Image 1 (cartoon, rainbow, N blue to C red):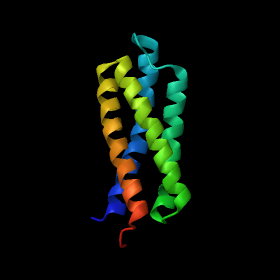
Image 2: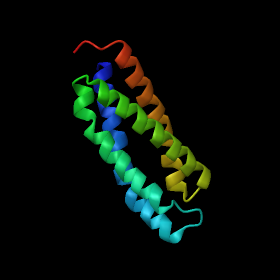
Image 3: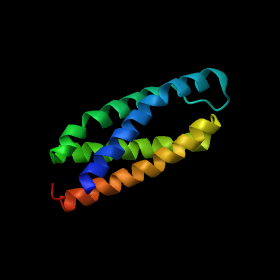
Image 4: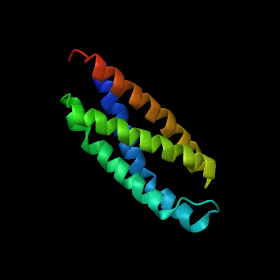
Length: 120
């Protein structure tokens, strides 16, 4: 499997993961101490949508898509680390850690593939 396919798969999982966590964040917001604030929930939705929206551009090797992907993943990394620090629930803390690791891997793949494009 080449780097581009791994990158696209990882970005798709991270984008869908951002969207899938929203109901859990909303539930934690109403029931748990140290809850994710409403703006964090909105940011998670936006990050998920933008991540999925740049996939075709990344596939086609567009520079704007790679830059957008790096920015979105860095913002999601920071968001995940803040989520770990707030400990709203065990699920959100664990998934925040997974998102942080996945975001670092995605940024690394985006940077490496921008420098040396993989053969299709």
